[in-house]
Image 1: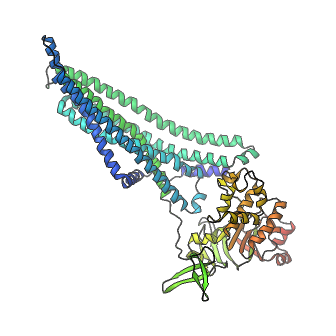
Image 2 (image 1 turned 90 degrees about the horizontal axis):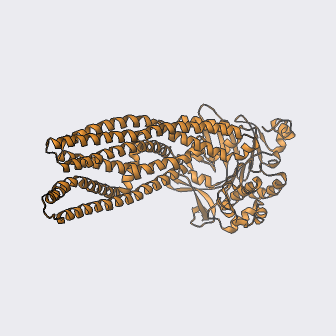
Image 3 (image 1 turned 90 degrees about the vertical axis):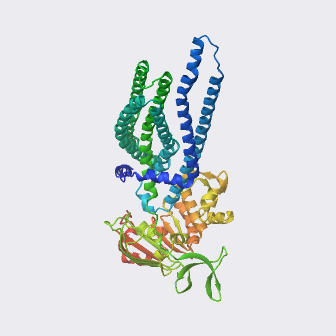
Length: 637
């Protein structure tokens, strides 16, 4: 686990450079699917801003044309007529009501746009993730990938639902207010603009400093999630080896890195608002003093109504600038999140140049033809340019010819591996850990592609077979079982989704899992959580075997499938395994040599090379490595 943690930390530090085009891609996605809603939102935001600005500028008219004449009438002893004032106030109220309706409407539409976009992003993420090769998951912390789905996509939600509409609304308001201010008083408008430029300069300096810390915060958050996910999965191992203090120390270091990045980012973000607010207050006071001075000395045609309207417009001009400054940090976070989201989306999918497919077939006039029926023999359908597709019966003949492979180019794992497995044969692999046993089975599935040589399946190079069809013909039972949240029946049916309940039960009986399943509280309908922690390791292994049995594949791969089963259970399972393997080509990675004594051929591997091959009796006669393993003179690992 410490090694894995170090790898996760190294990965977090070595992430790809930050990309700014992620934000443009998010906006393009929004425009593609919600362009009409976006246009409607823009129109409503403009209408809202117009109503707000109109209400501010109307103060001059209200005071100079309605209030002041009424005051003069009262002072002269006349009877004031409040009718025109009442109508003006009603007109203003109607404008504000329209503004409220428009504001509510665009906020309501924005919810649909933002959540709908996030829904599409997550669906696209998951669909693309399912197309990625296993190499990606072997080299990336799973918790960090989860962080992309949660924390990084949430930054996009905040961007779409809050930051973008707020910045657009503020920009429109600034434009309208600016025009209104210069139309009322160019002198006070210049004072307001000068202070606003200073505010923008300060905001730019602060946000440029906070931006890099917000990006680092997203990376450290993914790293922390990756470590937590790893420690949850390894909780039993931590308890067994009393490793709690060490993992707490490691987590504290990761958490401190997240704390430092977050605190620095938020320190800059939090001081932005007070600084900009105080600059706006100073601007307000200077405008008030200047306007009063101009009015007293009858300069620039300044009136009481103009001063009142300009002070309101001053606030209406400065507040949007403050709001834009605040949203810049959210935009920076969204850019960091978008870069991680699209970094995952841009990972190349698993390539598949295959053209050969697996189809059901039947014999007609001595020739195999494709059948639409659910049952029947499987055939490889090989398209040809110069005629009808060739139908090759699926038998299970697998041949390795001088195969060389390495997970990374600079380190070769398999060296010139040559072997054959005819239909119905059982081929076993033995050797020390790291000898290359599991790698061979990974190549049969094309989880990885070979560097040199060839692998043929029923005479067809597996590079020509479509990967889903290739893997449909293979059944695999791994040493590390993986169960999913659902019923026992669901987990067995995972091997073949169209299997009936009766077929699933027959598969469980074949694997000798039926007995313990019937002793569960709800039998086959017993609900288990991910990894089936409520079951023993042996029971989980039996379910994995039953899952492979219901798939009914012509080729079976058993990767130390009985290593987690006790000797008594192994004897029960072995009979079922023999029935399952009958008539199938089987590749067995052996943990116990007693399980492979009846193999047609046994391959002894050492450092990626086959050093001995033969059946059990012939290898014992050679008295080589296999003989030493069998007699206990040499340990398997």
